[in-house]
Length: 64
Image (cartoon, rainbow, N blue to C red):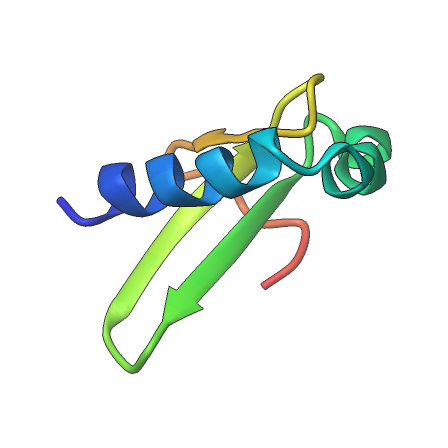
């Protein structure tokens, strides 16, 4: 699926920006529903390091 490459790109960008990861760290464990365009939707979880990982589809998102 497209979610895995998209997460890799987002995490690559986040890995080079300490300030951005720092903004996400307080939300560790929270989930977000991301929609790219009109048909690409995936659910992510913020990990303890401020990076994104795939979340199970049955978990309700904290934000979308």
